[in-house]
Every structure is written in structure tokens, then in C-alpha cells.
Image 1 (tube, one colour):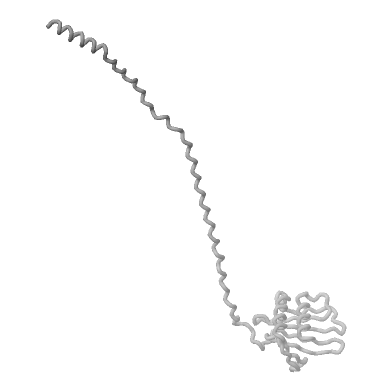
Image 2: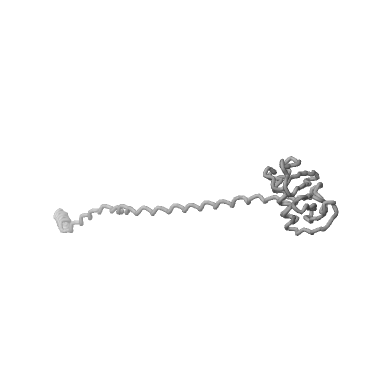
Length: 200
């Protein structure tokens, strides 16, 4: 019995020695950490928003519409078409003439003798009549005091003039002698203008 036990013990010992050693545990690999993140390129800067175009200036306010002036109304004291506005009486000269001329508001001319009798009526050209009226105003005759402007010596054989102008119902009368260097310029212009218009 004792022997049997001894044999069993030997057998167990031999079995234990002959068993292959168990493999050493494989070393554990350290856990690989994820590679560091790559530096990505910075995002391209976004383009600045284009400035919105400045609003175009509004058109300047339209010029104020000119208010049409009312057509001038005829003045209450405007002369009638057949009303005389200029009278010229010429006398003397070498032949001893004696004649008169009356210019109406419509520009027509009444030619007469020294006795006041009508000899001829000449109708006016509208354009010529309008021009005469304007030139008559341009003489400035109403600024000259009415009166007689005579030379000291009226000799010899010169024409004597008496001229009257009616302006807004007021009559301005003057008398003078041809060729008088002292005749006021306004009166000289008036006499020459009337002479040319009536053909005297």
C-alpha cells in the first residue's frame, strides 16, 4: 500500500515536470492614440460684401413753371384809332410854305393846308406805324418843358415848326426854327422823326 502510494506520487511528479510550460502572456501593446489632427488651412476670408451703389441723386426739382403773365389789357385812356397824337405845322422857307400834318393813333396821316382844311389822308403801314410810336417814345420829349425855343435871329428863309404830342391825354407843345444850334436835342429828334414819317 505504501509502495502504491509512493508510485503514484512519483508518477504525478513526473507528469508535472514533463508538462510544457504555459506561454508567457504576450505583452500588451500600448493603445495607439489617434494621430494628432492635421492643421487645416484657415478658411479663405469671405469677400467683403460689395458696397451697394449709392442711390443716384434724385433729379433736381423741376424749375418752377413760369406763371404766364396776363395779357396786358387796353388802358382806359388809350387813344382811339382816329385820335390825333402828333400835330406838326411847318411854315416859311424860301417858297413861303404853310402846311400841317396830323398823325392819328393808328398811324394814318392827315395832310392839310395852313387853313386847317384836309388835303389828303394817307393810311399807315402797320409795321411803320408801330415803329413810329416806339421811336416817338424814345425821343424823351415829355421830359422837355413845353415852350417856344427860338433863336435870337430867325432869319433867313428858314422853316418854323410847331409840334404837339399827346401822351395819355396830356398835350406837349413846342415851337422852334430850323437850323437853330441851341434847339434842345429832344425837340430836334422829334421834329426830324415826324418830318420823315409824314414825308415833309
